[in-house]
Length: 132
Image (cartoon, rainbow, N blue to C red; front, side, top):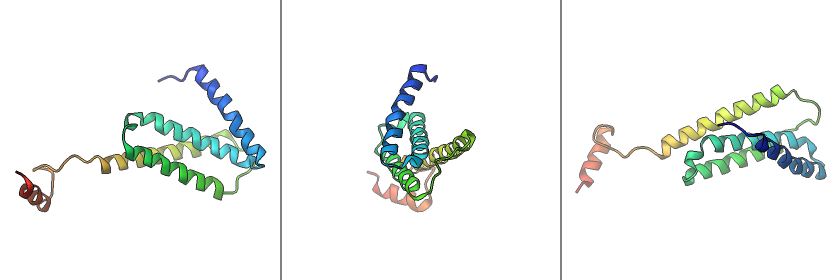
């Protein structure tokens, strides 16, 4: 999947009101971490788009938004210069953690039904007792 130049232009133009909003509330220090968090969350949603029909996926994304919001508001951020490699590195770690969590939640929520060969003995007995 290739990101078209018009899409990049939309991202840049779309981020300007967010930066302006933080500046108006005199919290310009929150603009960079908020934009990085939004970009990473958007990338996670794009990568896992095949799960968009699952309620648990959107619940997980909402929890990510809340956790990022709490993190952004609780940490003291700088308005000074920060190397882009630092922001990208933090974003990459954040991306990998969120993708791993989505993978674990997917495996937990979407387990295959219990069959004869895969369930522990106790569960096999329960399944066998309920079969018609």
